[in-house]
Length: 354
Image (cartoon, rainbow, N blue to C red):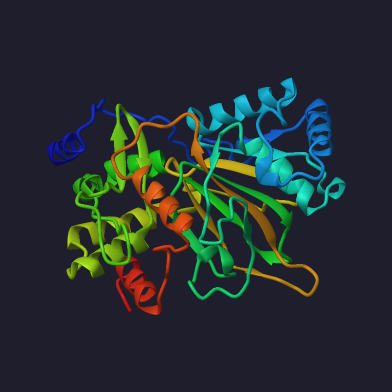
């Protein structure tokens, strides 16, 4: 474990030897999707309904925590914050009857709850602080606008959320995997690969530039485990630098993906209309199976990216890349462009074949 200790020291952070990492869970030990679920009480549902009606006519992105500040809602979101930051890293809110709301009202409800956890970021050059997750024409090949499978990964901001408007007729099953549990499995099974993941690799800062430091795939700060697992950034940075991804990192990433896809590590659930899930992007990897729409029934979800009011301790780069994206989206462009070449590079990196 000497190489692992040295790699953690290179992150420049305190380290406590991990037995069972903080927040580590598997599907069985975490109670499956039920273990992530908080069912709203009648009083909480009434408070939400009152807040939605009181903000009628206002844009969703204009509502505040005070607008959704009834004691019942503050208590709900305080519990959700604990689940996200100190518990398993995710919480699913169930019991909202979406039939009571039109789309704009449900957007206000979703955004209003999110304001208790963080400040919403723009998700694209469209300046959308509430994203619509659905299949649509998609020249930049953004994953959330396709119907294809998305393997376990992270995105870019600390807290993420999805709220279901319409479920697909077939597929679209969500999955969560504990980053700390995957770390612990690697530490037991392949400790020789951890140093490469703790060292990480450069990340792009534009279509032509990369960080002058390496962003660790695994961050360990005072025993707190986080993960930045967005492999297309690693492939893109290597292309910009004109070099291959280091072979040891490639081997480590393939092992990480193999562990994350084990059924015993993943909590799978179908988000139902009216249900809302919040999770910590760097504590929990998320995935989605492919799905199929049918006429008159198109899978539609709302999405939030949030800069958390209360932050989890993490290595350099985890927050910084999100802020770089914020600036780009504010300027009307983005480095989140997936070409055929970049997608082939990622497939080869993860699977070992073209």
